[in-house]
Length: 239
Image (cartoon, rainbow, N blue to C red; front, side, top):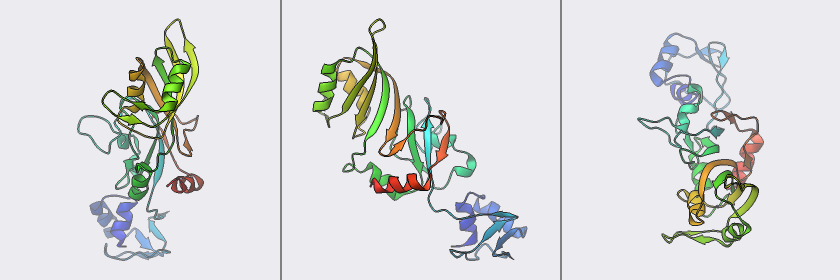
């Protein structure tokens, strides 16, 4: 790989900025000053900019606790996206969310530039478990639990696989419920439409896990963390 592409991919700077660093004579490969942006870098080479070693990592994986009001998209001319929540140094080329959460839905969202993993995790045949907690306008009953467990066909003909619904709390006075729901699909506004079919409305929706990934309790909304080696390994075994 060319040294300018290597450094640009690692967010050291744009190609133009990298070329300037090379002109300044502060980029080295194995302690040898780089003379041209076309110089090649091999797998075991030690690359430095000044005194900082720049190790190459092809793919990056971040677990974000998505807040409300942010789009699950890579870019938007008018609204903030989840990519905007990343530090500039972490906005690697092709970084994108795996699937999407609605603008007003919070919680776990995986961001990666590993396009193949993104594609495979979203493949219809995968049906990775996604667990949400929600506040519902309406009193969720055991009948609702059974209806969800049997699978549903919505008024527009959309068929949904069985979902596991757990009642966490009910507030008879205010007419609300707190629930936990596990679904294997991710159809458009699925959970909202499911409760809508039962005459209820989702007031708050928060995703707490996806497959083997769970949202850390100490990860504040709008913050993110890089996945560990074991988390990445588990994620890839999910495929």
